[in-house]
Length: 619
Image (tube, rainbow, N blue to C red):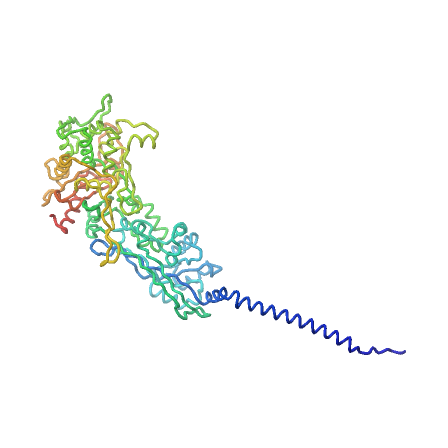
């Protein structure tokens, strides 16, 4: 068998090789051009973008929190300060199992059930990308314990910061308020860039009203880090602008004295300067310690405060509305004189009750004795607090005229105090009842309002502000807690501001009659506050009041010993001193007491006035 051997074809093989080499070269060239193009794109066209990305990997911008402004009383005593505190914070994005992390962390640092509950609550309302504290206020020992074990917890950081502290606890809480952690709802309303390094915000009181002043402006610094996230150098730094300090009209010594006078009683004491509206003391008792609210109060403690029958978290001085009772009789007397429905010489027969024409109901004089007071003029009716005279005057005046004049004293409206929580109270009128109750106004309701009862509800701030207007000759100032802003040696004073409604063109003789009657309430033989002010070495003026908390039948006689404590009357006193050159006006309200304003509230007011004049002089 013969086999044919195929010979090589150099020409064909050379052509094939050439074509393959050409194809391979083309592929290499295309890949090379693609690489060059990509390099051109990265190095030339996208240079700035990728340089920025590279810088972000090694350069970080860190916001710097400003230091919150301090709060001082009028004598330079610090009422709200900042203290260094360490906390442990968890970044949720850096861990898959938060519960396991907390369990492991608890082997190093004590984490209570309250800590866990607070953490869970803040976790539900946290701001995205923000760390959540699992423990606050760590001791030096706890800081050291965690620092040694920090490598085990990449999702947990130790943070040192200045936190708010209130050195006097509950004694100023209802005036100053407190700060707390920012929640989602608050975060949405904030200038988020300015609060990038801030975790707390004012919640109530001055802390909330002056938040922007106290907070300041955020700063920042750019830092360069290595691959291990260690600081290499600081590239740029813009310092934060610290918040401004607040300097208050409040006198801490007077505040302490007023608190000690109330003792365990529930009530209000507010003292102001009648010459500018500055608030010298603002007491609502009982109070509560605001410090736990700064870092997060535990649920058990919060529930105890919230459910307490004494309502310590309720600000009686700012939010509380009460029937003003007889404390407004000087104001009503001035309204009666200015409206022309009564005159200084006009007398009313007081048999101990009052009847409307054609009505069988007898409206009692709550200060009556057997047979009443007989013939009573305006001056005497203020001194002895005769309800019958004011029933008659209110009926002659009518509710709408009464409303118009009492509005000029500031009732039914805010006093302008520099807090957001102030109540407006209620000054009723026929139009108000038609709008709110869909009912007509009845004459008997006017009589109740005419002695500071019925629908009329006033705040303690309104009572002391309107009394100060009587003391200074008719000017109504907006009440102010803050006197100045800024550092001690470069303060920006806040000027006194007149209130919207003013008592214009008061006849001097009318004002003198009312003021003289208030002086005789304190110094006269028949004055309802004479016993409380016995032995003082200055002249004062005032008015006692006793306001019903519950209603009683027409013929029923009120006996405080037989009434449940919470339904007993409130005792009030408003007054000012010295009589000729007033330096202080005061309101004292004591809730649910045995006896009236003369025996319960007036003695406390006398001691407040004594304490202030002893320090500031009587002339």
